Length: 340
Ligand SMILES: NC(=O)c1ccc[n+]([C@@H]2O[C@H](COP(=O)([O-])OP(=O)(O)OC[C@H]3O[C@@H](n4cnc5c(N)ncnc54)[C@H](OP(=O)(O)O)[C@@H]3O)[C@@H](O)[C@H]2O)c1
Image (cartoon, helix red, strand yellow):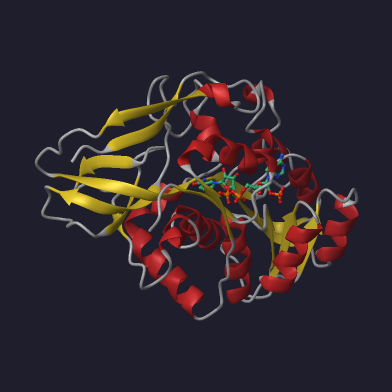
């Protein structure tokens, strides 16, 4: 049977917001599988902020996507053909195969993860129990090191990473305060996720609202956004505070990112300098399975809730990325590539 693979290739490096002409749509035959390989039909594609950085011609913690290459991304899908002893047809698996509908990979790849829809829905393996959830879990517990009674602030609090950070902080007995854009997101963070407060950074009163939400100052700031939120948080950090720097999305579309103010500029200029460092979730790769297990357990116990925005159709992936970069997403942004 000839299968057609639909895929998005990077065609042009963006300046500012990535427009449609940055990608090229292509339909090609799926090649014959080689021994040791599996063929995965993608069901959901994860859309993540880091994708914007990978479109630039710059090396960060990993290299750029090359022009003409399939756009980078993680999917969860079903094995439809196997020439590997590790997987059989019908298995569900998470794979870093990019923006395409069929993915052929070796069945012994280190980043292939089996997904079990009896534990949590498949899409959750790209969100709360997947890369964003693990990012939140390790960044908060290993670098934030929150103690009971301390105040933890997280920005992009209604998003894929932020929702997990805030709720884990509550599980650990902290006062958890979110920062998010708009009333709907802030009410969700307090009323549904159970954080103690959420500050709407778009309401025009950021410093005062944050001050009111954090009467005992801030002990841990989980950094996701940079910019004015970072500067407002810095004023309230307590001595001995910790700042895991996960990302700074407010600058990702900058046309001159090398000259933008970063969280390192803000925290590094403080006296005393708070404990702060950038991290990548892969630092704790050996412990990923444990984090996934613990996060799944909390979901089952109702201690962690989450929300997803599902854009239907791989052809709409570029718009889904723009939605993440402008805050139109609410919770984890996914693209539904095919029916389960
Ligand atoms: N270091 C790592 O290993 C790692 C791994 C995963 C993610 N990350 C980082 O974690 C952060 C959150 O990622 P995510 O996947 O959870 O995304 P997300 O929070 O689900 O979506 C991104 C959110 O960022 C906010 N945002 C967008 N543009 C903004 C702007 N100009 N200023 C302020 N906020 C803006 C929006 O929320 P509002 O509407 O509330 O503004 C948007 O919903 C990102 O910085 C990402 O790069 C890092």
